[in-house]
Length: 78
Image (cartoon, rainbow, N blue to C red):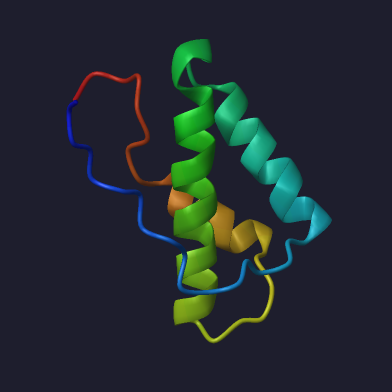
C-alpha cells in the first residue's frame, strides 16, 4: 500500500473571526474558480489567522483577510 505523509495537527486554537472578516473571506473566495474554492478558502483562513497572531491580535479582522488575499491563491496564471 502507498505510504502518505500524515497531515500535521494544528498546534494552536483557531481565532474568533469578526463578521466583516467572514464576509471579506467569502467575497475573495467567491472570485476563485469553483474547483479551487475549498483549498483557496483554507489557505486564506490560515494566512489571515497567522497574520492576526503575528500582530498579537486575539481576533481575525477584515484587515487581516485583506492582507492575506493580496497573496496569490490559485486558479490564476502567474
